[in-house]
Length: 378
Image (cartoon, rainbow, N blue to C red; front, side, top):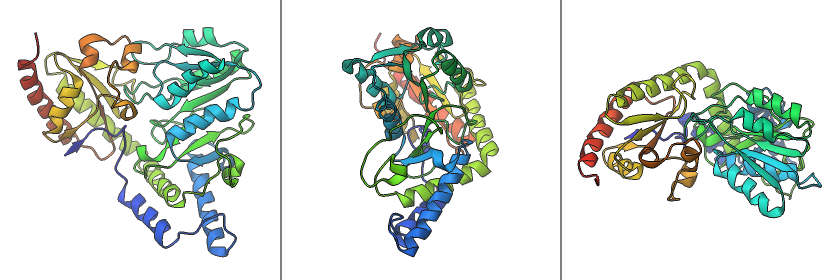
């Protein structure tokens, strides 16, 4: 089986799984308890917090552990707006993940002034539209670092400077779920990430909150995470995340180089097939681990099932929207419609994929395309 859907989730590494098992069985103590084994676990969790924060050039006190990207994205929004007394302007883009796009658009019914900024044909935010939307009335801006469907990379540094120049009271949140540990750290006020995108377990992630940012936090209860996110600490997953991230850090350059090689090999192979198009940025400008291609004359969903039967797992877009039939919001925003949108497939890679898998995947796709195109409706 060839797995090219790593933007949806990744396999937990053996090292991370072993650490998780240890903290679920031998060192299972609740770090909130007062006896010495629990205090020792608390120290280990805080050491992990400091390491994970350092990868974002942050202090340990600026990192809140959460259940993953969706919770981080949600509480970034709600925890910021909870401290405002006005119905401020909230800005996002047309290509955000549903965990950002849906809650922000829901604010319209509450009286907030929601502005959705467009993107260019490569999937990157239109800076002129963003600049035009930034006024003193803006309280919150949320823009993703790397797009989960196309691999488009936004200039977060430039966006941060623009936001704080034109809307000094605004908070800039960045969805970094597809970028954490893979792309260079960026300057922002809030940054979300998730463990299961880098070979840690599902159900753990974090939210960076820059010192001085007005933020109320998320769920209330026992006061964990400095009273910003209550709930019993998920020690086993946090320590597994720490292990996975440490491995990624140690092998970062080799991992990125390998994923880029696989992406480039697959792209080269696929472009030899008739009626295949690239969606999103060029290979050099996009993230080295996401590739979106359109196969004209077939429906992506049909092609997906055909190649699945031959041992290749891919997707037609975000896993969180995979069961929602209809138009692809991200591709539509980029101006990709009709047959090209219908035939779009996303490939996403991990450090352990190989160029041989890229060769085999291309052969599988070509074989399926040859058959499906023969029976397409005319």
